[in-house]
Length: 494
Ligand SMILES: *Cc1c(COP(=O)(O)O)cnc(C)c1O
Image 1 (cartoon, rainbow, N blue to C red):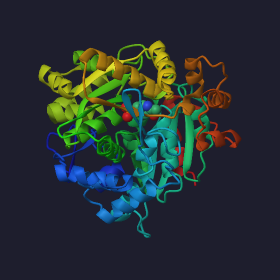
Image 2 (image 1 turned 45 degrees about the horizontal axis):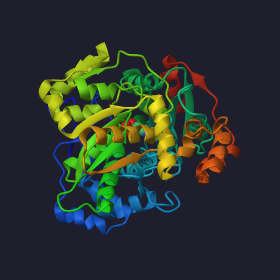
Image 3 (image 1 turned 120 degrees about the horizontal axis):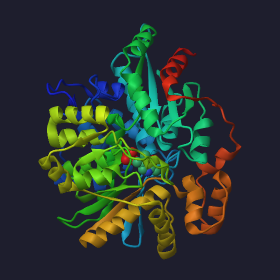
Image 4 (image 1 turned 90 degrees about the vertical axis):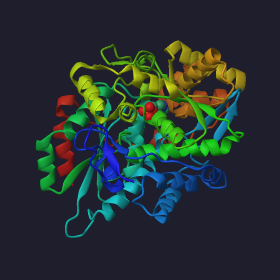
């Protein structure tokens, strides 16, 4: 399998190694597989008998053909071992009429671990195989991450201590929860750095994208054998492990012949739901894909109108990992439906005017597979309370946005298919708003965790309760304009 850029009409081809190592195409586009992937019925059936790591390796091997089967199996077994995921990476839990796929059982208590425990292993393999680790000319990959809270910590956990890499995480100073901030500021490892930015997530993401396009920065890093890469969900190495859990869920759902299940995904950067779409296109028995947004409902409006318009007020919500106005992975869907030339035009318009409109056929194509809803803060909180009262199942603020959208979809369409909801974070990671939703009086951070634990009689994940006693290591907060300087400083530090 070769890969092409979403903006390149000449479709220059790249190998899996180049795709994983570089993260983003030279023209600013995103890498996509040049041809479709497909699973036969027998291959789908065979997944049922496999462990999670074997399922993941089987799915990933269809896309990343530069790795041997042995390499992928080994990497998946290490990434998804019991000491990282005590309960497997994607267990299904039934609550009421819905099935929740719990993607938050990893070390940072959010779904991004499923991809980011594996991706650095693939990254290191690709560095080796492309000669970047050769003793006479070793290279260093500097991973730049913009985070709305969960990516940062998951990427730090994944890359900490990985040879040949350094990782620098930028987070919006006031845009992440206390616990998310504590998780990042206490990160261990010699090759890691964390820096606050005076701005919101989009400022961080734009800042990182600008550094990638800056030739002067690139030249200075080049001299020292350093190159930039990304661990954001625009990296295809992040997407493909996510495709695997949708196949895994279908294998566990016990769907009858010809049956499909609908899927709801709480969305921000559009990576997780795009992975569901890729799984569906590759033959996973999935029905409608329901894109759930919070009050920052750019995506809901886009699916309903065909106009993607970022010229609007930005809200800081109780589901901060979805507080996003520019959903980067949408570009891959546009490329699939509209081709590279139109995609490049849409992205130009987005950058220069903050808005683009797709053609009617493209909009119709989107609606064949997707539908979209949003939940405001009140609806999100009520969903947490109602779900807990009616089923005893506790969900976090992001998952609740999904659960609300799923209910709305079922009410409107009377769909008879089973509903799979991606549960993207542990409720204890967002303990304070979850307490408020349940009407439990609490403070912030760790106090809220303890209150929530006492009220629900559910255990706090060990990786979260442990944090309380850990020391902060990073203190810097900068303005967006200084992100490039900060990058160079960290790159040249030893
Ligand atoms: C990142 C994140 C999301 C959004 O996922 P995307 O792939 O960016 O759409 C939703 N919920 C949680 C808890 C997250 O960390």
